Amino acid sequence: MRNNIEPKHWTEVKSNDSWAIFKIMGEFVNGYEKLSEIGPCVSIFGSARTKPGEAYYELGCRIAKKISENGYGVITGGGPGIMEAGNKGANLAGGTSVGLNIDLPFEKHDNEYIDPDKSIDFDYFFVRKVMFVKYSQGFVVLPGGFGTLDEFFEALTLIQTQKIEAFPIILVGTEFWSGLIQWLRESVLNGFGNISPEDLELIHLVDDEEQVLEVLNSFYDENRLSPNF
View 1: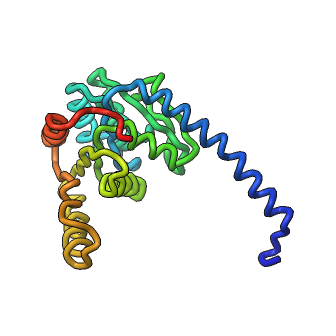
View 2: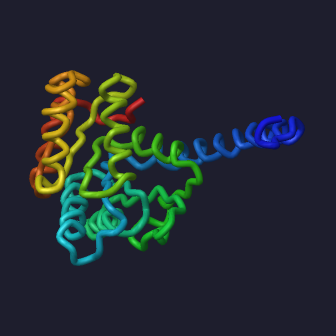
């Protein structure tokens, strides 16, 4: 057989994959049970490499504090950087502070600002992403890397394809995000026609905590708060 894989060994691999279903189911059940009780929340995303004292760390903290003071809880990926800033801001405001943790290289989990009863561990990225989308009433996306972009485009795709109810997707930091928005408009939309003009209207680009809160409140003045699917 090609690649020296024996048929018997291949059968064992497939059998092990089947048993993984039960672990996946367990993660879904645990996540649903814990997150169904948290109330309206906003997820904050951004780089794990951003350090305390840096501009976007402090801005993330102020954003989380501001939205917590206005009745929203905060969900993050539970790690350092912008995630820590989000949990810290919620904690300072006495708001709900949730961490959806996953072991990753270079990241120490979980940060100290998560509510002890709202720190949830995941092994599977896709289960964790379902939790972010289902239990968030908005995504606030600060500068980050591949993981941040993954969450951003995941939400855009699900809303665009009407697989979930629309919610605000807020990019924070014109200096960081304006090049991406320009590329989406000039190349993806106008150059190749791969998206529609209204798809870009799903994205809000802002620079401070007051604008973040304004986008959230404006949206929910006209839409009900609820889980997304």
